[in-house]
Image (cartoon, rainbow, N blue to C red; front, side):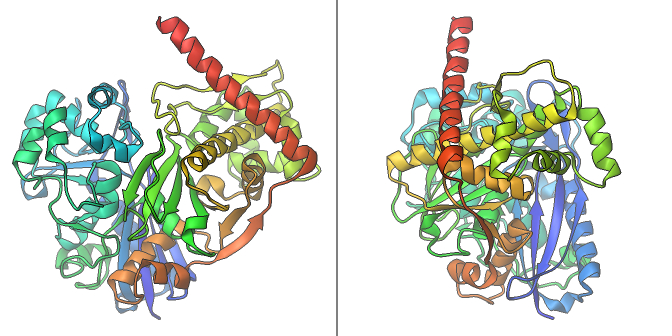
Length: 536
């Protein structure tokens, strides 16, 4: 059996998935990874812990698929856009006040560098035009500046700074090349010009990196799927249970892998907005020419589909926002116990509860009558690029039962959808038109969720035929590295396919969502006004 292997490292787990050369899933496995949180917006992980989880996941997936190492013809990696800091010989360095060298990763959601991001934005360097006009504390240069200012000994001792996907491919192959995807989307590399802008680094206080000719952040930048080094090293192959020399492709950020696994499944990728709905959410919009959208990251050249431009939006909290929302309700513990008894996740249990009360998936919105949620618990990533924004909940009563919890859940999902609609409309005004939404991510798997997203945005939502489109996107990189497909587009067309289409409701339901969307926008405005009043 010929197979390709996709490896996905998310915020909470590492996953491995095996696919045949038609894109059919053979087996998958996952293993949890550790996450440390501390006051001050600090969120950290361990590269050693993550690599161990990757190895365990790959071995288990191989066992479940009943494959032998010779069957695996290519490997692709994707990961969150977290910052890995390594010293000489790849030794881990402590990135925070814990002084624990094992904690060598500043996680993407870590917001310790908000102050640094604001100072960078105040400088207004032209490089920022390619990140939507404002850099985010989730990106790497604010984090690097924080390290230089607050952990100068660690910054100075670092041999290499990696995006997590690039760390994984280096750990697998020994090749320190970076992916166009990672450095363009999160590090300010100008892929359309094939260069770093030294003046930007000097202006913001990271001139040392420029003086070093950028050796610590990447001098060889390769398009995703490009074969790296000599394939798996002896050491990595032994740890993974695979053959040395197995081809490994340059990686992707996890959300972008979800885009690759979905946007090419039906028609031109330009027509399809890839929506990755997981812990956070990401929107991936592909264009033939650069489109500048204030508050939306990009335009990025060759960051997802080689030769095309990408705009990236979304929110820092999406699935996590829904979890936070429902955790605040008095009936959550009771509902969670009932969900466990039925062998379901709490969101699936609440979705089922809502569906039993509603005449259809679209009419579930009626359960949220009077309830409105702006789920910006961790700021607004797009289109406002405002890390200080916070959630707003309006219309709460004294109800404490599970049905009222289900109604709050529906209102939260609608809020997620209205935020997506806002990004789509903002991009449309700037010239980036899409015809449909292709969805991936664990938080977007329920049919009710997909229907509500179609209804709230007014666009059809296409699910991928594969249950694991993110893993499939990584596997496509492995197929490219192994020479099994001609290029990214060929891999997308061969291995990905669409499943069910969820069409937006019309008439009364559409009109209701238009009114609720207007209420969503009004609540956003009120929240900004309140901040302005209280902050003086």
